[in-house]
Structures are given as structure tokens and as C-alpha cells.
Length: 74
Image (cartoon, rainbow, N blue to C red; front, side, top):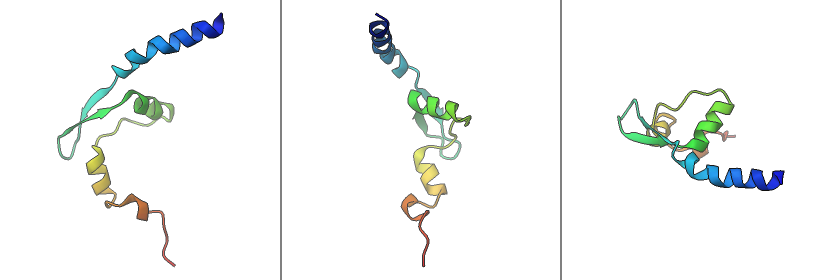
């Protein structure tokens, strides 16, 4: 019975989780971006603050291509 109740609780909770998305404004370009519920939980679990820049501005501030950052030249 507990398993059934837990399943139903998770099943009916999902539509409400989707409505917890936050719309934030980028501090650099001013465009709005969505901070989704799953991202909020991830940031909260690690003690991080919400993002202040949109994905485009973050990519530009990191130098554009993130794939090259971790590689060293020999």
C-alpha cells in the first residue's frame, strides 16, 4: 500500500512542479530566461545562488567554446 501511495504522490506532484519555474532577467543583456524547477533543486542541493546571466551571456563570458577549456596543449 505504501508503494502505491508513493507512486500516486509522485504522479500527481509532477504537474505542479512544472509550474514552479522562475523567470529571471539577465544582468548583462536584460533578456528573460527560465530557471526551471529541476535546476532550482540542483542549485539548492549544492548551496548555489540562482544564475544571474542567460546561457548566451554565460557562454560569451567563458570565451565561447566550452569544449576547448579543459584541454591542454602539449
